[in-house]
View 1 (cartoon, rainbow, N blue to C red):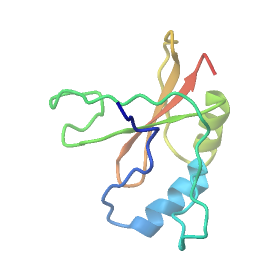
View 2: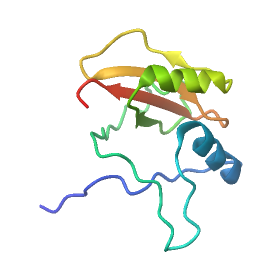
View 3: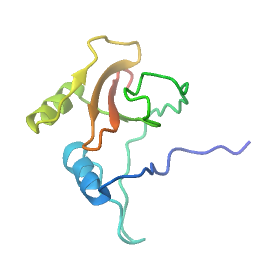
View 4: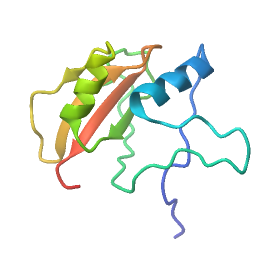
Length: 122
């Protein structure tokens, strides 16, 4: 069976696409969408990616109307949290260490939940 090799993009609606793209660039280091085919898009570091549909009534994302949540891998969760807080971004650190790593939660300016994950097995 032929299989997909990874996620090639994450596309979602926004009230201010340019502003939101710049927020992701400034605070999370995600490059802007290329303006031409010769430009290089953001390239993620190879690593695990969880593809997990959730029950429609889950509270995990926070807002029940939220249809998606992105989880970004980070190398150093504490450093990322400090950087975000220094920029005035509220960060909720999950106090529990799980067998697969540590987690924190933020929201982008439009209220979309973002989970940050520092895997233990890098």
